[in-house]
Amino acid sequence: MHIPENYLSPASCAVMTAAAVPVWVHSVKKVKEVLPRDKIAMIGVGAAFSFLSMMFNVPLVGGTTGHAVGGTLIALLFGPEAACLGVSVALLLQAVLFGDGGILAFGANCFNMAFVLPFAGYGIYSLIMKGTSADARPGRAYAAAAIGSYVGICAAAFCCAVEFGIQPELFHDAAGNALYCPYDLSIAIPAMMIPHMAVAGVVEAAFTVAVYAFVRKTAPDMTYEAIRDRLPVREESKKGRFPVYALVAVLIAAVPLGLLATGTAWGEWGADEIAETAETGSPLGYTPKGMEDGFSLDVLMPDYTLGEVSEAVAYIISAVTGTALLIIIFKLLSIPLKGKNAANAS
Amino acid sequence: MQPMLPEWMKTSEEYVPPGDGGAFYYRTLRSLGGIMSRLRVESGREGRCSLPAWLKLLVLILYILLMSLARDRLCIMGLAAAGLMVLAMMPAKDIWSVLRPALLAGGLAAVLFAPAVIMDPGRLSNSLMVVVKVIMSVTAVGIFNRRTQWNHVTAALRRFRVPGVVIFLIDITFRFIVLLGNLMTEMLTALQLRSVGRNRKKYDSVGGIMGTVFLRGSEMNREMYEAMQCRGFTDDYKGL
Image (tube, helix red, strand yellow):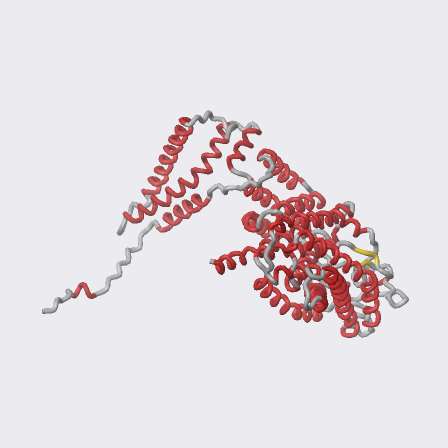
């Protein structure tokens, strides 16, 4: 679901970024207001879950691949606003360090995966859980989490498909060849939606429920309900961070499994691949002009690889780097707030 | 009869000392002293299950050596990932104090490489690798400093058979730089307060200040050494 560079016109990118900015501003304000200082540092762990879940590629119908996003999971743990910030920072790292998702398309990617996904997912969850709490009805909470995350990722995929699909209508040359993404709505929407509804959504729901249940059992103070309602922290749960970190370590060790799925995700072909794609039945036959001479950036580890080295090793190194950076970034973000909270307390 | 204030008491006086040479040298010495007194040894804290200091020192040296010798991306990124992982486990405040100098050094490296990248944009990733090397090496030293008590470092140096005199010198130097910096700033302030008006011989006192600092330093050094000997110090750092 990461929109690469040059699949959207610069104008579309600007519009999507403009749409994402107010969401970021609102999220920063709300997170500062609601979350206590140590929880802000913990958003990094949530963002690490999201980052890692995006590395587990699963094969989808039609020979493409997809992945979970984990945005609803962070929303369940720290609230949708924190999820927005967490996923945004994870997407930024992916774009800047690993070339996954474009720099220009960063705003659009954030709109889909950091705004639509967690807010839709958490909205559905709280709708289902209205009038009851996860502690009272854990079964219902897990079902709500599953439905919420499923709807969330499908909504995000739909937004992504629409952004792809309007490109050929808006931007084409005199010969009718598209300048950017060549497939219109009638192809993009089914191509994105069917695999996401059939496979990726299920994976997302399973991942969300599994991790949510694990965290609720091992570190109950880490859920958004506990934070929002300011439930008293049980003493033993303070030690509960260790299993959470252990789960992150296990996920890191398991990321090479994500390499088993070969093939490129729909809408993430390289400029050299796109002419051979045959979404309409026959090969496209040309490379859209905007992709041939578009903006591109050298990154440290393009596509999570390091030259000739075995993919699995490079993938694990990428996972460790990304996870560590996310945790460091959110720990650093919690510092200025610490001063503020201390001043309020005294 | 009303008391009359004499005329001269009614006018306000603003005495501005006449411009005098020596501002440059005062400022230089003062900033030198300021920097010296800020150079205090960071007091590292060790966790409950911290590795022994000599092992950490060995790992640090190996890390920096490997980092500077590594040429392929796998090695560099692997080492960087390991370093970042250790850093991520530290408390937020320590992370910032470790990262700030590292980012400064990285920024400096980036500035140095900027012309090369502008001339040949194809080399960008190579230059980025060097920046990563610089940042991670400085980070590694920072982590070591934060996570190791100073007396354990000296013990570790002794274990590596560094002569006791050398360790003694390093130890004393780090402690005395701060003291001497303070001493210098204090003397400058005293001198400035005492020299009102025009003084043509300002530069004569430079040598005086530096000489006094040196003399006081060696005196303090001798006194401390004697005090240490009185307390049973035998030029050996093993037992500390």
